[in-house]
Image (cartoon, rainbow, N blue to C red; front, side):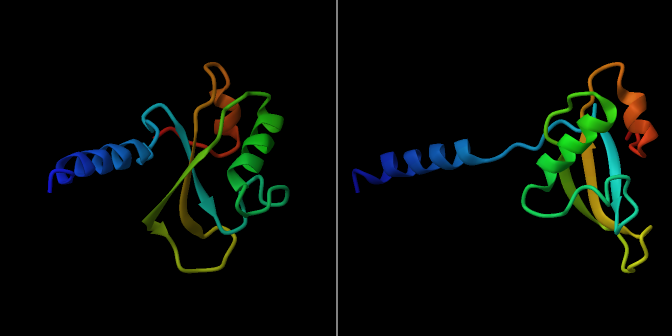
Length: 112
């Protein structure tokens, strides 16, 4: 019994430190992913390292270092069809450096 409180405290501290925080999306540009009509569709394969490959592709196309893109799924943005223009429900967020936003807007990203 005397170890209960310290053990509970240690467990709560450990789990509190492991939680991933979502990035601040207010300054990000966003892109609603489609089935196959995204500008990178032919060059970037889906998979475990999609974000890293997309980051590399975007940096090559825009000349701007952005860091790792963040992807979030929204059920209400998913459409049940297989046409290339149908949305998957995934929204991709990037944080381009000041002065390079237009390059991303030209690729289809939007301001929230």
